[in-house]
Image (tube, rainbow, N blue to C red; front, side, top):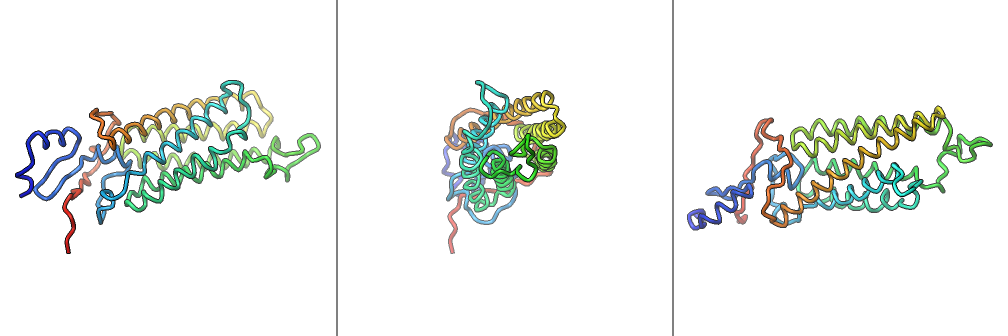
Length: 272
């Protein structure tokens, strides 16, 4: 009934944004929903998305700042060597923003977005421990020539194995991003490849092949930098959608290749 009083111009304007009014409320296209929340459009009880801001962009901004900084340093841009001066990206910029985003993704019922934020948060935290010299993690493998133990075969091989496991974790997430959009799927596929390249670099270090290790590290850094640029793009897309910028930023919607899970996002006020 309320639908009869909506001006045609307003209806057309909403449809251009991917919103479609119905007699009972408003539905959102899968592509628009997945641009703004990075989750497949599935049924959710409650109306939390109307009461809380979209937290996905916050998590993305923390990720891309950390990833782009990390990538530039391991590629040696500007003559940089070592990540200890920017240890904050491992413990504050990345994890803090993504943990905050994780909590609100959980409240909103966005399962996959919550998993993504949690995955990257713990990755940055765990990998950041390797960049804290005071922890002396390599001391058990120390030798007179290598008092810190960080050049030992055992130390570097262990990190290599750890990164192999992380590569499979990222690849697993890539499989599920094929339900969402091309940009996110590319981010996870490239992240898996970059992680395996960095793993190979550590294995080369364990054998003393420093030249090949350096080449593999730079290759992994280049891919991570590309991932960060895609992350910047997705962050911009989400913020543009939330700020109602009238432009259709393509993300390569993949939801139409899967069974529809369209759910009406009602705009009615709940009454007893």
